[in-house]
Length: 185
Image (spheres, rainbow, N blue to C red):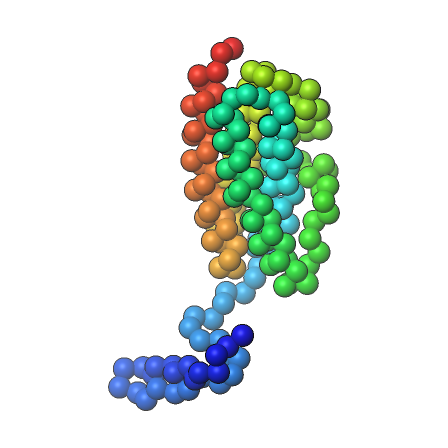
């Protein structure tokens, strides 16, 4: 991976610099991974998968461009996040949650099987309303999970992921609430 060029590590003020040894990590040492980091990734992967399942229903069930735009944005953000968290778990030697782990997951705003079935059956305005209601609650759960990671996690990559989830989904919640308020009853 490297270029073979030497890496010069500066010494403290007034001290001589040195050349880093091959494979040496230069800079701040990585924070040790803690259980909170693993819980975040293992919980967020199935959580994101359920969001992708819900967004996959949008195209065939609505004609509302705003709802379609939400679905595209959610899929564009969460698909790479799943890949990144899966790769991170693999690096740790941890299994990636099973494809349908979200079906057994509860809490954190997860939709029940009955709610998902109702969403699958809905069309038009009824679909739009239910999609937004479920996705707002789902995002609120993700924000809570991200907050827990930020409070107790130590791994830099998982904390950055949590910050992205927290900020991005908080913004989406506000936008979805605005759209929901304007939908006909």
